[in-house]
Structures are given as structure tokens and as C-alpha cells.
Length: 97
Image (cartoon, rainbow, N blue to C red; front, side, top):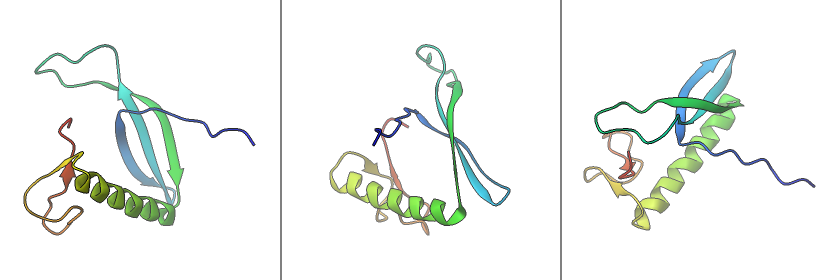
């Protein structure tokens, strides 16, 4: 069995629902370093297309990973709400963003 393909992306770009499928654009920084005060420019790397059900399962898995990152002290949580608390609008956030 061949190894799965790996794709590096700095972040997700646009996430849309089109034709009943969720489309997630993966993007990376274009060019060199971003100068202070400039808006980073991103270029597309790949697109992930999945069913809404698959997207919801993925979202749940990401919420669980965010909790693990907060518990491990790798990211800091905004406010005093528990990680992944959508009602308050607070969530764990990387110091890089």
C-alpha cells in the first residue's frame, strides 16, 4: 500500500458549501517574510471536498484536539471559558495568530 500524500498548508482559506459539499481551501504564505504592518498574502495549495457529515465529524475531532493542546499548555485560551465553548465565543488560540 502506498503512503498517503502529505500537503503542508499555513492555514485554511475559504470554507464554502457548494453543491451540497463542503469545500475547504488550504493556503500557504506567498513569497518571503511578511513585513510589519503588511497583510500576509496567501496562495492556494490544495482543496479538501467532503460531505457535510464528514465535515461535522472533522470539526468534532478538531475541537477535541484543541482541548488537548490547551491541556498540554501548547496554546493559550482566550477568556475564562472552557476550550471549545462556542456559546461564549471564546476559544483556544495559538499565539502565532
